[in-house]
View 1 (cartoon, rainbow, N blue to C red):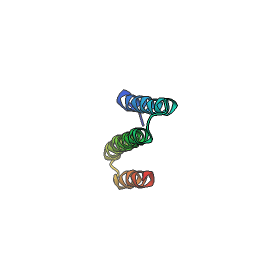
View 2: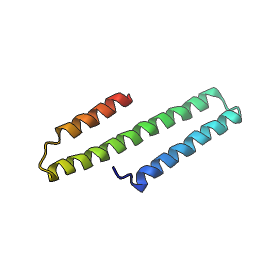
View 3: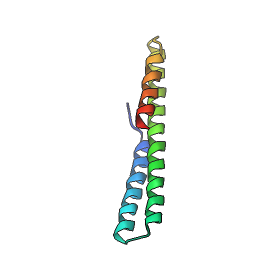
Length: 86
């Protein structure tokens, strides 16, 4: 799979969020604020994973169609990745 610049940018933003949480800890910010930011990071990771799986599935379905194959295996693999990530 080819990873687009948009995908990489999502992860770079996540990296920045994590660095921000570490900075908050170093500055001894309130626990509630740190947990709130960690929750935002987790949500962003989930969205990034969903986006990557969706793009991968899209590419696999196109490839299967181009080769005259059934895309069912690609769909099942994508579902398994999503379920495994939870």
